[in-house]
Length: 501
Image (cartoon, rainbow, N blue to C red; front, side, top):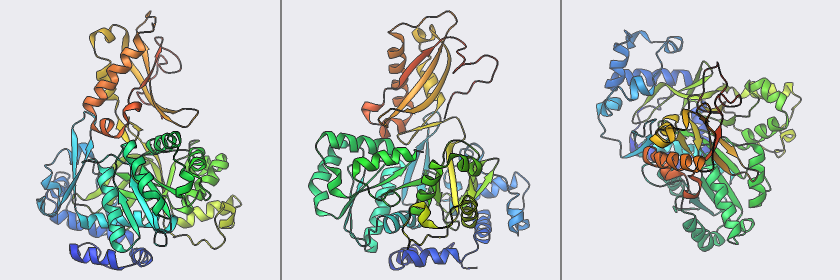
């Protein structure tokens, strides 16, 4: 088996810079991904103190795990029983933070941050996902490209991670300039006006609702996006193909399968997969054939559909949720990421489409000469736990509860609510919270605004992602008040769910 586990940082960098995307992916395709995951396990069992203890407390002898079938019997690693149970250095290779040269932070359910150390060497592996998008979709190796990073900058994973990966592509020889205004619209517009006219194309990278805000506000400020051959890179949200179509109309997109791409990523695992022209074309076909989508995905809603490299990030499923293994400064070994979704092999997808009458790629509105990469698919409905995603921030019910616990407000409400994101008729995201009133309590015009302000204040206080990802003008939630035991949101006699997808 080809050993991809322990090259030196210099070797990793030189290999990335001097080897074409085609060669790198072909090298990975030649590796047995199951053997590779087993080898990573064996390394973690030796070199990661926390994982050694994790196994020992479960009476598992690493020497007994000699086949992939035995690998599948290993316990799942989770945030509470592993990431929060062991000191950070113990979760790293060698039991030390030495070798990790950067850190990302994600917010937990109480606002307490989780730190994810990384290194440039591991980041290069993730940069391949960006290279797939910039090469295969945007043809950035042939076109001068201005990449504008619209994710929040700081310790949060989106902004600097994206910036760093784009810099790696520039170092590899892509004619790429990276601008970093972050989620500051006026700075974004200044970059567009000054720099975009000098490039063949402009790429906006950010959370979908914020990118839409940028495009709409830019139009209001007389920016003609059509002049700049705009491409889009998204992360953090599931969106509809109708939404993609709407954004494409406003930017002048003429090739929807090639003009945008969504990344599937997490703070703990980096970028796990990416949309490709093929996956977008397939998803657009499913959007037009909902019965086929229900047959394949098992739900009436359409998931995000991406392709992934199983040597970089090895996926499994457990009870309809995703489990991932991958090499990082804090390696993931059968890590339960709590995303609802599933896996489809490339040949399985092709066979399903053929069973539905799709015999050729041009039936998916792809060019006749299009050559897909034969990578497997992962589909993602979103978090399987009780969070909703809003402008890329995970919003937790615990954060909202605190906003309802002020004495004046508690005199009106039961404390039960339903948290959801909605989409306006113009495609804007709205954070909506339905709140249950006490029995016999009648709503008046002062209640909803007071509750909304209280929740906003607590979200800003408790949730650093919300505070830094969500534009100020989108931070006020929309609150609706409902009678006690309202059948739509608070039916009597059933277990209450605090989120609605």
